[in-house]
Image (cartoon, rainbow over all chains, first blue to last red; front, side, top):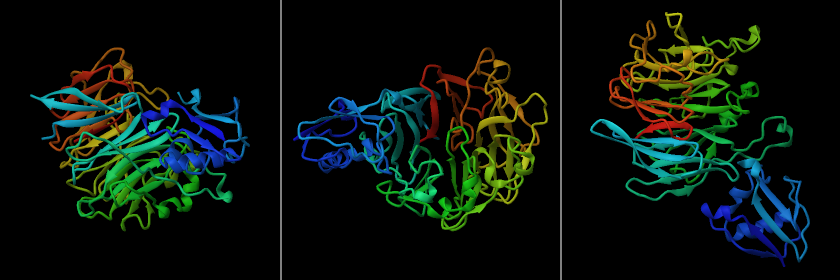
Length: 89
Length: 364
């Protein structure tokens, strides 16, 4: 199972789940997290479904670059970090 | 008499309290987070705070009357952006720039003006929001442009106290729009305004006007005052025609962002001039407030208690407010200074020079 880790900065605003997921790509993995805490969606993605401009995602240490489709693949042993990008202040 | 106010800042929401006619800073909320706008709903006593988190987007919180707790509620959400509209600014909520209560006969109705230009309505105290599609679909919206931000935005929402369905909104930069049916349909009402920042052949086009801020006289609701990018305008007929107001003294600038109107006297209004479009600081480093008592025929320059040397404070759109008594004023700057006046601006007292950049003031 892949592991999904959210920045602890989010704890100030909403519950941050620890997620283990069998999802094959990033978007599906995020959906698993939103099922645990639906409010989390609005903090990570905007209303068009895109990754928010100042949220950074790393899969196994590599920053993703597609912020629209969110179809980067993850494997069973992957660790996905969802962090705040310093561009946001 | 109002004894409380809310101060929305770059680093949190601060309560102001008046005791023995002295205002002081009280409780802080959302400390460290940008609070772009607050609203006090006089109908049920609840308060609303719009946040713009740098990383995690726009959020909205509500605090019920008498409660210490803020609860996160829904934010306005733009609909999916069609492929054939991808040439427009992204249909994404960038900022809640204005909040307004519906009429006294519409409990729970709220309005939100946003960037990139959408007006939203809630019928249930912000638990859900709906885009006002009729305004979003006006063909003239293609001509709207950013004014102060990259995208267009609605900063002024005026609900007629005589008829809740009669509304006026101001868009930077997109003109002035009127609805007489509660937002079902809209008419452009910027005739008389002039935009010198446009090519001459478009200077009088309504949909490109940049009204920086519009306020309505509660006691005479057909009168609106507007601080526009190119000067001061006033209408006495609900926006059918806007009259240019020129301060008679040549040393009084008519450039600025904020305007406040007396709640009962439609001829009395306040402005905070900056030197010019290309130099947005007080003239000669001396902060002044200008006031008219005669509908703009003449202006007084008020400076007692305001810094008169090396002052570079700018008062932005929502940084000037007048209380229900028509005498108590609050004024705040983008560099964190806050002043009050108890006598209509004749004299001012500084409350703080060290607050974060201040976005908006709201009497409670």
